[in-house]
Amino acid sequence: MLVTLEGLDGSGKTTVWESLQEVHPEATFTREPTDSWYGDAVYRSIEDDDADPLAELFLYTADHADHLSRLVEPALARGDHVVSDRYSDSRFAYQGATLEAWAERTTERGLEDPLEYVVDVHEPISIEPDLTIYLDLDAETAAERAGTTNKFERADYLESVRENYERLIERDPDRFVRIDATRSPEAVLERTIDVLETRGVDR
Ligand SMILES: Nc1ncnc2c1ncn2[C@@H]1O[C@H](COP(=O)(O)OP(=O)(O)O)[C@@H](O)[C@H]1O
Ligand SMILES: Cc1cn([C@H]2C[C@H](O)[C@@H](COP(=O)(O)OP(=O)(O)O)O2)c(=O)[nH]c1=O
Image 1 (cartoon, rainbow, N blue to C red):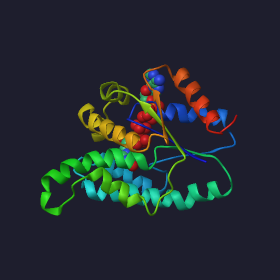
Image 2: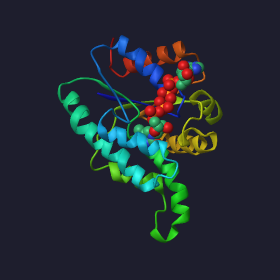
Image 3: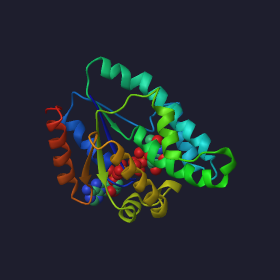
Image 4: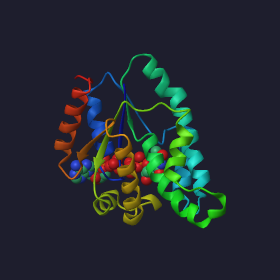
């Protein structure tokens, strides 16, 4: 089973992901961006305020393709549960938002719905998660917690990312489980463990 953790920067994904490793030592834990050289290229792009949004989408997608073949597919083939801190929905929500502004500047190129475009790029090549835990947090609190250290962590940008996550939840309500990320880290972890148990990932 493939489980993904999603939410804004600062929503507490990594905190939950780290604690879950003690609860589920048998599972395979992974994340995007990955620690491969593709992931390194992604982090270079994150630090570059002038990075081309389209180039950035395909850097993230290259990292995802490598992640799938190198780690996710083999782990699922072994019968492991895989828990990923961020996955394709991050691209749909974040690059969907970044490409909105790009599409407004370049109307002659005809990118009408960036989120749908990014979904379409993934559909024939990726593996859809069985379950996605969405840590729901308002953009202001997310930006405060994240410390606004890079271009993705500004509250106004995170607000549009949050709207995109809402669109994704609306189109796929059975896959997503929303958890209130304003609660304490212990409460968020307990709720996540309960949801995993309900979906067949037992302790
Ligand atoms: N439930 C929570 N309530 C308050 N602060 C939290 C909570 N979960 C995480 N934090 C804090 O918020 C910051 C970002 O958490 P982190 O797990 O790195 O988020 P993310 O991986 O989603 O960016 C860290 O300083 C962390 O200690
Ligand atoms: C995986 C992924 C991350 N991102 C962004 C979200 C983060 O701002 C940044 C780095 O991700 P990450 O290291 O997970 O940051 P955090 O732990 O603060 O959530 O990359 C995308 O824009 N698209 C993607 O596909």
